[in-house]
Image 1 (cartoon, rainbow, N blue to C red):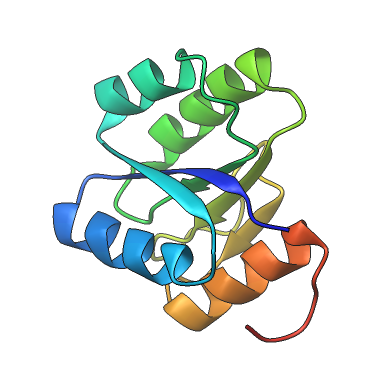
Image 2 (tube, rainbow, N blue to C red):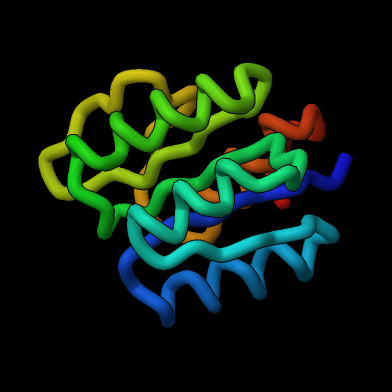
Length: 117
């Protein structure tokens, strides 16, 4: 089932690439660059059901964003992409390596499709 995704990063080129990959699989993606832009999108009326937090976001900001997202949209799933040395992100449903294959697999898992994209 296609998802409405909010993808957050500090790297514009990674946001564009991630958006293209996910939209090629039928998902609707809104990209947010940075904390302020992410919070604005989260506070909008858009019914996001998946948040993707890029590896360029510092650990503490990821956890702060997740807390804010969960307060606004408790049913939304959260996928966090790992920074070097990052072993956990409080509140994330999945913590994965920052590569396209793992991202698509994670989105498929959350979408209930399982398997490789």
